Length: 585
Image (cartoon, rainbow, N blue to C red; front, side, top):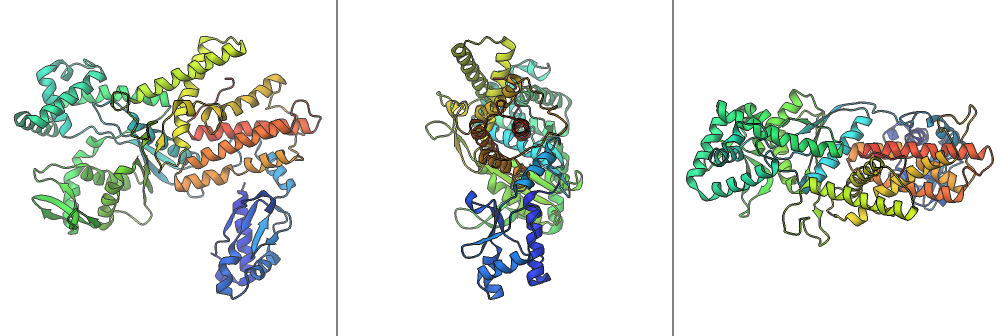
């Protein structure tokens, strides 16, 4: 089934061609949702943009378009308003037919992409031997939601976890552990992750202060790169231990990833330098091999180079990212590569993207996208930290959300004099707690920073996950209260729209495809959050103004179908955000 907006755009384009000729085949009809419902549902503004070109008043142009416009199967007769806006109001019969058609479709009538692609989403990316902290929250949650939406649209998505599992830090850590805890280098899980992190901090301090230790650490890196058996074994143990800890977080967040760390690309790094030298882009600067960039300068105003091989022959993040990019294009055959990282890395991505383009490594049909996001702030408006000033561990943050959700549930049960099983309470606490954290993050425009507040995100009022979950639960409550089987509402069931609240809800239900298409392109999940919040709000108003179980037929069945379709839409939309629903709360 075609999206309503797409159908109207096509018909407007046909009218433009009929009125003014084939030169206008690719003219954008500038069709947008009407800002005020009293003017209709959609508004085409193309007449205003054509006034100068055609040498006519916009209202006259609008009239000529409307005279050739056939939307009788979708809309009421078009109206021209103001200086030349073409207002379109959807027919009630069209809305009813569309809703009845998608009622039994698991995709709710949303088509898959016309040209599905191989797409890569690079997200999360923690560092080995370090715990995941609040800084990894946004990348993990935003990246997962983007991957879910692209998968739903029909793309072949490779979810990559580009973990930091290579480099100087391992020489430093292995050297230190050889001195203080050698068992950790030979025995699996000899340390817990907290101790490992503590040892890493001490190793870093030694590295910064002790030149002998620093040199020994560098030699250990050389041994690792050369594949020395004892060093390589120690490295694998440290990676596996961290990996197990990461997986606990990913299981809690219901996030799936394929790990492909920096070490994967290590054998490809010399080839990157060799290829850049062949293109003539490589220059020497103070003993390092670099590519000088357009539009980037240092503090003195001199051109800024991107270093791809250091003076000691070592490589850096840029070299690895260039190698990864080449592999993803040549081997993975990706047509769109999406990197989800904090905005502080924007320059890094702009720089290595530029180098790759200068080297002609990016085919015309490959799109590179950096998806930047802002910081997570504390109530004081500063970077979110513990009271002692430490970085907040992600596991602690999620546990706290679950514990607070559990306390809220226990309080509500006590107030309502309800008794529930331990299993029920813990499941609800986990779903509500995790959903609250995810939704609070995703509902913000990702380019902005936001204040992390447990009280706000766990509230049953406002634009929160609990509010949306409760709307879904309310519909399931209707089913239980009326002993209704939504899958069996009769053979001749039909959605019939009579009341304003019904029409408002119906129109919103049919906009999901437009929203998903927007997010597929601009990778802003907050658009989907806004849609679902408005859906919950419109459903609650419908529920207050239109009796369901107590209404007479055929309104009763029609309203039950509207309830069911709302629940299905909420469930689908929330699943694309990585959020589970609950039948009861």
